[in-house]
Amino acid sequence: MNHSIRIIISLLILSACGGANQDQAEVSEEEPSSNAFTGTPNEVKLMTVDPGHFHAALVQKFMYDQVDSVVHVYAPEGKDLELHQQRIEGFNTRDENSTGWQLEVTTAPNFFDQMLEQQPGNVVVLSGNNAKKTEYILASVEAGLNVLADKPMVIKPSEFPKLKAALAIAQEKDVLLYDIMTERYEITTMLQKVLSQKAEVFGELEKGTPDNPAISKESIHHFSKEVAGSPLIRPAWFFDTEQQGEGIVDVSTHLVDLILWECFPEEGIDTTEVAVVRARRWPTELTPAQFEKVTGMTEFPEYLQKDVENSVLNTYANGEFVFTARGVHGKVAAIWNFEAPEGAKDTHYSIMRGTKANLVIRQDAPQNYQPTLYVEPVGDNSNFEEALQTAANELNEEIPGLNIRSSEHGWEVLIPEGYKVGHEAHFSQVTEKYLEYLVEGALPDWEVANMLTKYYLTMQAYKMSREN
Image 1 (cartoon, rainbow, N blue to C red):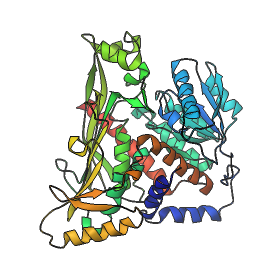
Image 2 (tube, one colour; image 1 turned 45 degrees about the vertical axis):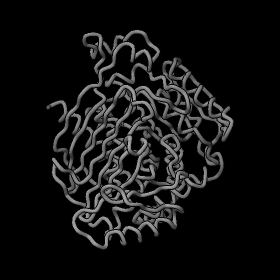
Image 3 (cartoon, rainbow, N blue to C red; image 1 turned 90 degrees about the horizontal axis):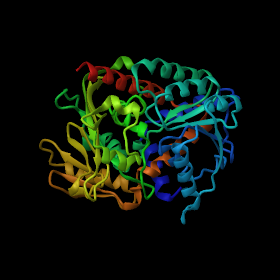
Image 4 (cartoon, rainbow, N blue to C red; image 1 turned 45 degrees about the horizontal axis):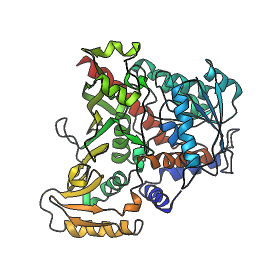
């Protein structure tokens, strides 16, 4: 992994409150389990199950000393498997930073049962059709296997008890169940979190109201896009909310995670400390031509006919909701358009409102569609610029070249280009963190608590959006 990624990870560690170190110390005092990892080369052996989403391949975009180069894939035959193999082959044969993965593929109607029976590895990677994902997670941890799962880990409230059970069983069996929260590693988000903890700049986090939340996050995605330099072909089931999940339970998972992670660093938030205030959902309309462009299919399959009206596919990929956590109001919005405007990409907007300043991430045309962090003071504070410059100088010790400059409403944080590694690289960063947790022998308590709580919130929002 390159130097800039390592510095970003070190910044993340420095911004923490020390809870992880305490958890590690507590783990080290316990007797090692039979599932103990030491960090030695090749001790982690991956088993990828039904890799229907390109995120499964991105876990392997780079190699790791701790992970064996042989990866066992269990999946049904079909296009999803073929595309996954092509992506891994692309990583193996690229000109720079080529990988050396070897896939051992098992295809059968009962592929998952065969994986549980054979267990040639010790970590299950799940990223694909979400209809059975919660079931796969529960069965894997019951079998004593570690799980690294793409979001969402649950898409229906009826499945939530399985996830709750899986988290409890994982702790009982000393295996690690962890979801892939890539957005924690985006540099502007990380700096937003760090600056929010500097009282001389940010003040205190506002409580907010339902109409003016203390923290808001909006994520805009596109069905038609490029991944690893090639047009992305999506499986048709991706547009079926019974298999992929609605937007309010899918991308929203990242946004809820970030709100808990930024507002309450290293603090586990219990489900009794949160509540959904309001929620709504709406569809994205796709014409047959648009559907063909992103799937290669000339007709909507039978399982999508329930969502077709006047020859247009309505997929409920959009959702937003407001919730409270310990009295703080947060809002998340996940939006899917068919295609981005010329020169644009997926975008993110976020605001954290403090008593001294707002920390705002914008990613629109004025920012050349690159996430950009702004610090915008509120009220009259004559010493604000001096305090912000002092904070920037401190951060410059970890990120050489970081600085600030005046902007329309305050200041823009200038981040050197080397730290803007992009979404695809974040998957390796999450995997590195998971490998660290494997060696430590446990997840920090706050990680486990917040995993349960964020999915509790998305499930409550799902139910409320349908009531409305």
